[in-house]
Image (cartoon, rainbow, N blue to C red; front, side, top):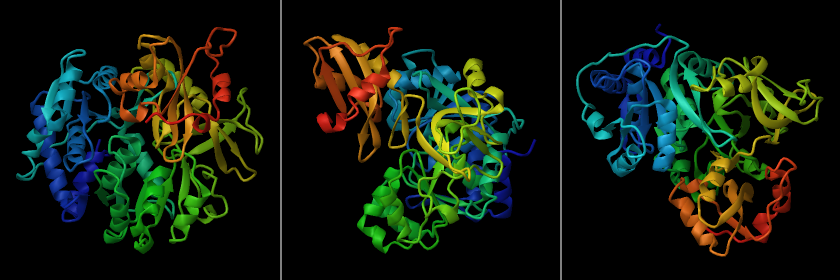
Length: 505
């Protein structure tokens, strides 16, 4: 079966070998070089004993090596498991165990993290980036093991509302379907598109809509190691960037940089924003530069972007997320499954060619999420008379901070292990910069203070999960008749937490 990410890369290496594929800082790779280098990595993995279908974790921040190694994993016939570099060892261990990964590739500076992760469970093979960096130069290399269209080729782990990480399965078929659908509309991506990526490669937007979309369409991806707003504004003009995507935080930061006013944005054709509420003032700021920011709705299970505001409707319907895509349908339903009337709130359901076939080794969650042939999002929305979707809220309790999911249950479990904690609830607090940020409400004894709770969290979870608000109370938290904490009552009591309490960090 030749319809794979690897076969697309091989085609561009043959037909447009001198075209620039990847740019990171002052370094760049042509398609010929990218194909050969990733092929040598694939062969090396196979020679090390990595078998077809085996899960391989790739850890680390954005770099020149990361995307090449990721492509090497795919070309080795293995299953790519991107690992968030901000996770702590216990969090990494959970993902690796869930995936059944026996190999982890990492940059040298993560050596201590990898060893600490190793110590928490079964051993795994650890390979430093440097061993694959040494393969950068060499002869032609066409090594490639193609998986069947519906075999898993990547697992993208996303937090669930239960606090349990779930591996969303991507196959060559779903990934190529996402690319195909995205390239069919006038405002969509095209072969040869230049994209600026200021998001981490390890998440769905960076991996699927950044790297893999670029490789399949033979484009150029300019990868930034971190967001530097003024530099990003300059790069948009210097590279004649045609596509950029991200959470509102990114577009806000770029638009506030002094360089934005003088930036040449004339080449920018596709600018999509999502993952949090999008202020109208932000849309207006980019519109004044001739760029229509199009709001999207999507989720990892649907390939990242399921629907986006049509270009011609961006100005008149700024709070709309469009009405689906060419092949992706959506509907809003009542609790009984009947379609909601226009303007009536209900759960958002999706179906289309980019929807995941399920969760890794989790048939129960798969059956629940994909009931009746539709992906049940757990999100609340409405549709207008013309079918345009408006996202309202999450039925789930997930907190989205800066576009990254944080599970309240996970944080509650971590904080509950701190001596002195009797009850704990984590809710979302409004935040001007990140959209939302975790806030913790605790009932405990006199030994507790904000500093102890924050320090405890810092040692166990990534920094973006550490609460920015801590409230310690001596009264029990509200509960339901069943005995469970009443999150509805807690959220209502602390709906203005960001106004009543000071941030603790």
